[in-house]
Length: 323
Image (cartoon, rainbow, N blue to C red; front, side):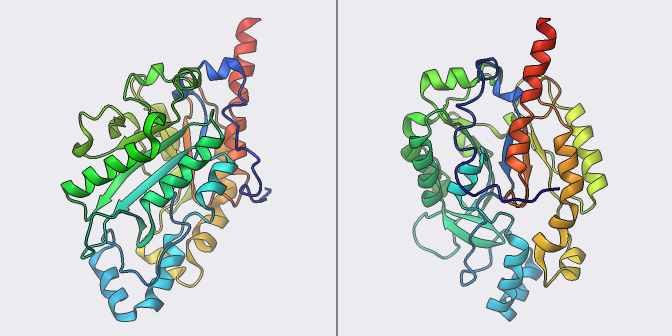
């Protein structure tokens, strides 16, 4: 299997805008869309406190070993090596987002998080917005699904920030089946935000989390992962939601212990990528098929390109029906 970096150049920067009209007229829930898992962990701050998403024993270790322990955590926290722009250029259009305040820090600033604090959310959103301003036919899914150390004021601040940064590019919550690329292009909308928290209820541009289920296998074994992906696809709701297939393996405590020096990328991901990518390559989008597929370390394979090309199968299916 080839492992050429997907994030070099702007290979897939305009892939949505380049789709044939047959596909841009289809509901987005029936297209194959590449996504990244823990999308904003390409940079973490080893000098910041350990994130509130970590278990007590991890916080205790980090307190004792300080920067050394945090450097081990970096190996297990970082699931993406590409910046936002590189992921967008590579064709990634779904982003899995975990956010937190910094406990004890004055103000309402929010940060991306996965074990260690990363960039300010505002900076990441601005980078996405800059890309969208230059690629007017590209659409992104922003899935805010985990929140830590956030009270009502933090949520109000983040929701206001999303509206301020993206403005008219935000798509109103409506029937999933009505969302096609043609529909979004006509309205000049490019951002669908899912906000898994009651604070967003009643705000038209915030979509509820139940419209983007992302079943999680929680396993280190590739065969169990693939069985889980198959089962959850078969159970996918016929109406009312997009669907995320999380093609990711999750480290357990003993996995971290065994792979302490090597980290997630070397120990868990690279050795199992061929099995996972074989499953991805065998999929088809459309009714009862895949929709959004996420992966760790999207630059290790031609991941985005493989997922995008799955959409060609919809064209060949249509051609067969037309004969």
